[in-house]
Length: 338
Image: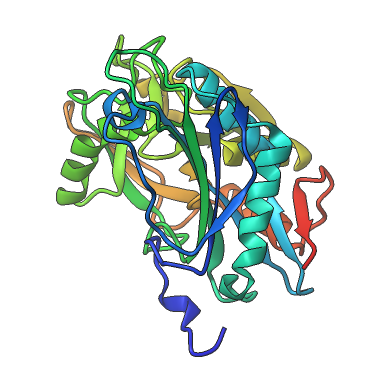
């Protein structure tokens, strides 16, 4: 695309040419529709507005040095959207229809795919919500699904540089047996107040603890936490943490690199044992952690001013797979044919 400074993009909204939509009515999904408008008609009594029947996904497409466009683990996103839909009683979108909608949105906006080595990628945001009139508290009978795309730069303006995180015990992200494992907007709404305070006090994000005991690591801002010690990749496991596709991929890459992988509860005290720590997710891939401040107990857990060697290797390997410069031995990428 001409006259675009791809490096100026942050992680914000940019209107592109088209988006793709689909509606669920009368017990079935309709045909895919294409729109150039970034507005959607929402019923005033929709369950998405009133009762939080809403879920979304986030994935990326990358243009490699060979000119090919790759989408990373598209089917995992489709499965996770199905899981979220099941969790809050929304109509589940078939994987083949989800895949078709995402690929169609990418193709329609081909000119917005950033070139290789620009530092930017094409972010893809599918969203699904109840759009039928329902004043009583129950599931909708109608749903709207949409996919829009936009070029984005790094989620954190610092890029792959360690930043500081903070623990505040007065904020909960998700309740035990609640919606923490689903990618629904309510979890993110619950994180906003703590996150806003963290930013105001100079931190990148809040490292949330479990809501029941305030003893175990939960989510790391909008991402999953991981720590490195003794050639082992350790990441929390609980029924309140969103199953990150990036984290799942990093676990596999760590094993491929000859590391041990542990998915288990991690206590706050164990933060002192890690040589490296980071947050991982689609937007940032890996955001290395410089230190974690336990604000309630005046304790700092420090991991260094530069990204650790293992974190850097994991980051470079995953990015290489996404761009096609590292062998995709697990067939994670879908190559888009234009």
